[in-house]
Picture 1 (cartoon, rainbow, N blue to C red):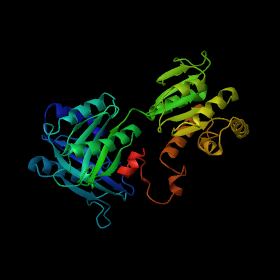
Picture 2 (picture 1 turned 135 degrees about the vertical axis):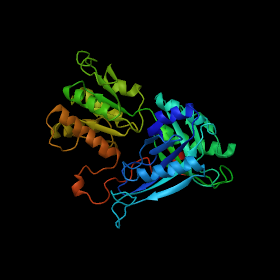
Picture 3 (picture 1 turned 30 degrees about the vertical axis):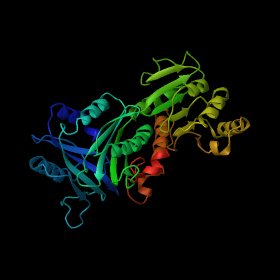
Length: 384
């Protein structure tokens, strides 16, 4: 639902009920991920999409019926129809399940606050019950900020606290996911399946080395939604004038900056200096951090020499296995712009467990399972 936060916030501020259709399960080549939503207001206004156009008409009709009848939430499944190419279905061959419910802002006022924080760029997560006792299906609970506060109720304080504990873990990790909780008298007596919609701060891309390749990479990283930092110890090169697309430009020794800044499992570190006096202390520090991606630029000869120096510096083989070097995918890139695409393509493939191969050579569904949208157990979340 957070994909249409601006319109939903307006409707909530105006105290206007609306029907909300949310993708709660996908398989195969479904075009949009779990959590994507379409909403229909009481005046028939529609916003959002759940399939890129394949089943929008049918879902719109379900939403209108929900607005008119006010009936309890319903689930609807859509898949490909071989018998009738124009039947309601996904021509891409995938399948999706949709939860359609009526939302009354007066009944769940915390949603207004949650949507407001999304629009302000603040971290927030909204847990939506998608399976469980019928009286709870469609109910929501929001966790704000760093996860210390929550609002909304699923029926009892015990249930709310149990759910908030799981949601905090996903909010810290920046993941949208289905979560199974309950069935335990000590936490939540009723078994619930939740879809947790997470809006986290943008992931970070740390680019070390204020070179021409970094100019193009900062542009590509910004386009992909990263909060981009360029760091170099040489003030003549590390300037805002050279890197207008970067969110911040830092003049400092790379390893010293990395040791002082905040990173997480979504952070991408790109080392473009290929200068040992910068690279070795920086990569030694980076390879010891729980970040999502670490890549370093340089020729194969530079890479081999770099590995020798890192081993001498005490870096283990397990840590070295995390290093993507030479950085990027083999796209035949030559220019800084092409190289930036090569690097970001590798980051995308690594993040999403992609092969990096042409789709024409990869069997199976085009849209595989997306990291962060699988079903998590309560025990697994506590380990996050």
